[in-house]
Amino acid sequence: MATMRWWGWGHDDVSFSHEDKPALAPFIRRHLGLDVTRVSSRAVAFEDLRIPEPSLSPGLEAALEEALGGSRPSTDPLDRVVHARGKSLRDLVRHRRGELGRLPDVVVRPKNEDEVAAIMRATLDADAVLIPFGGGTSISGSLEAMAEEPRTVVSLDVSPLSRVLAVDEASRLARIQAGAFGPDLERQLNAQGWTLGHFPDSFTHSTLGGWIATRSSGMQSDRYGDICDLTRAVRVVTPSGLLVTRPVPSTSTGPSVREMVLGSEGRLGVITEATLHVRRVPERRMILGYLFPTWADGLAAMRDIAASEAAASVTRVSDANETAFSFATRKTPAILDRVKSRALTTYLRRRHDFDLEAMCLSFIGYEGSTSHVAAQRKLVGRIVGRHGGLCIGSSPGELYDQKKFDTPYIRDFLLDRGALADVSETSAPWSLLSGVYDAVIASAHGAFDELGVRGYIMCHLSHSYHAGACLYFTFAFVPSPQGDGLEQYDVVKSAIQQAFIDSGATLSHHHAVGTEHARWLEDDISAPGVAMLDALFTGVDPGANLNPGKIV
Ligand SMILES: Cc1cc2nc3c(=O)[nH]c(=O)nc-3n(C[C@H](O)[C@H](O)[C@H](O)COP(=O)(O)OP(=O)(O)OC[C@H]3O[C@@H](n4cnc5c(N)ncnc54)[C@H](O)[C@@H]3O)c2cc1C
Image 1: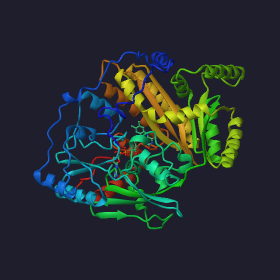
Image 2 (image 1 turned 90 degrees about the vertical axis):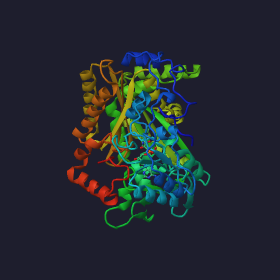
Image 3 (image 1 turned 60 degrees about the vertical axis):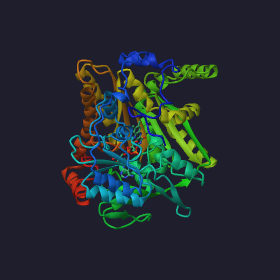
Image 4 (image 1 turned 45 degrees about the vertical axis):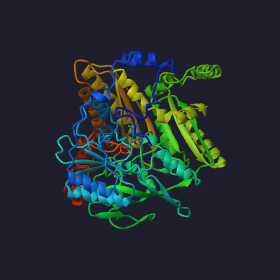
């Protein structure tokens, strides 16, 4: 897997454009006052970056080379810049400005678990800092070394460990190395008729180890579960040796060590391998589009689907703002699509319960045998109907399914035009969701007003559970030229995060803590909870050599 652009998302041959989406430029002008036809801001040239010399003693360099079986560790400037941070908005803005922060001094790529263990020993012996690096898609500041870190910083890139090692067909468990990227991992499993079913939006550029270390969640989590449900066992190189848990379905061995590794963000060691639930590649897979008259109707329908016997793979509903944005990003429609869309609009206008400004777009996915899919559709259809919803067929869902991995490019497109766009996500019990939504929307608008900027915020519900669901907010604004863009971003982002906490939701459903969300941790899990985590990290890593400063 080639590394991503050092200043943004993805590869150079893919980018987002407004030119094939006729409604997008007017939409953005109307809501943000931004002319997207003008590129106003670009990343500084790589040649103009000020990259400090690595601080690496000859002793540690030699020890790392020995650990790598004679391969030289990398001090290449581009390698160090790419491994310095993840892809949060703050990461992108500072990289684009040429503010590189504390770069790793050296990047190592072990080829097997023994080499990981040898690197761990060499790093601890030299009292250096070790930061595991998967795909580098962290969105919560989990990868950057602390600004004033005086010790040598080693970035351990796990990506060469990329194989599916074995599938236990009877138990439906696969042993997979932690550096496997999403597409490669699925390709290897699919070749044997299996799937992991974990598809985060960052799927193309993130790894199994990163998913486990951040408690990731994928689009089809309603059927397959989050990564914490899928992960049955782990192997982790820790300062005191190799931690191995057994792939048993359940166990009574005290507090779960496996759970301690989930979400550990590199603070307990390097995950080298995991054993995960896999399922047969489904015979049939479809995502249908639905429209609901209002956000309240959509929320109630998702809650009732979760409470029913229906087992959808995806349940997602956008609020009216996100629905309007989705329609604005549609490509120039073919004549037949235009006729269909006009017919639908006329139909909706005639239905008194549908106000086109308030309606909400939803996607519901089904997987399994043909008869299972048909039965699920019928069950869900009845629930949707009870809440005034309407099925609009498979084309919108198919389009969403094809394009979902391209949406991360929109952030770079907006940054090039001087606008800041980011996301914040949370989860809450069903009884609180609507209050959380209202509080977040009000707080974001309060922050836009305080800054005197025009902003847009939109939301969708996804990842439904027995007891609640995830709310995923996306916001954008053009910062005022009078102040620093990132300081203004902090005002909006903090207002949203604080609204999560104040309304009973969690600081993050699947983006992890890192440094970005650490200040809300105590409010979320209480002071004794933070003390427990602190004791765990200090006990395992007394020298604070493993990704220090993250989570607590
Ligand atoms: C545009 C965009 C969309 C995203 N969409 C989603 C989404 O839909 N769902 C979701 O869950 N997340 C999403 N994320 C967040 C991010 O992709 C996840 O946190 C992902 O799990 C990180 O995986 P990675 O391999 O890139 O890990 P990295 O970013 O490289 O690392 C993340 C953390 O894990 C640690 N780590 C990585 N590998 C290991 C290992 N082998 N052993 C120990 N520690 C390790 C790192 O030290 C770091 O602390 C998105 C991010 C972006 C930028």
